[in-house]
Length: 184
Image 1 (cartoon, rainbow, N blue to C red):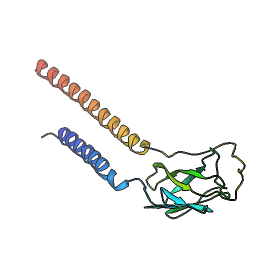
Image 2: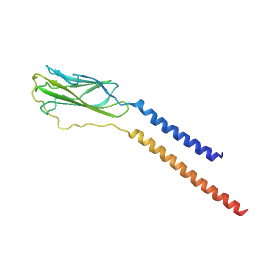
Image 3: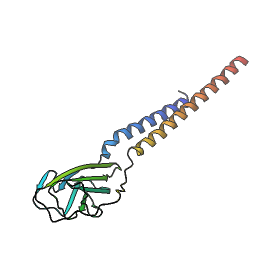
Image 4: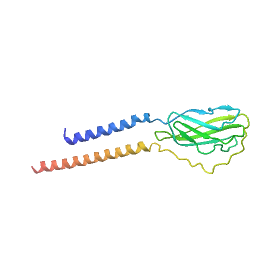
């Protein structure tokens, strides 16, 4: 086996091992998921809560929580606070009876955006009047799969370039070998 073939075989083996490593390692980078809420999802409450707490299986960042009441108004007060795996959102004093939706969006440790909705019902009117409404949501999103696509694309480009170089080199060696045979 020529040294050129050994180099090509080694590069192909290394590239294959890198691809297998990237693909097989992704399950270890699982997204965060919601493990508990307070009030509980689907709870029927006679007295209104003062805050909502979301608990995840891992620490989260870039949190956004919006609590919408049965009147279509937002009842979240201020910015949510994330401490480790818990996110707490303060509420304005709730008023109308009905279903309240807690919409959340967080970024997990692996950089992926996780979002969802939980609901609770207020069965007796609370003391609150309609709160002031926010003018814009201003949410941010996560990086998605970009962190995986870029290295794979770069690796594929390097491998393609290497194979192109080997093909050109091989053609040049054949041409040189043919000219030596024809001259001799």
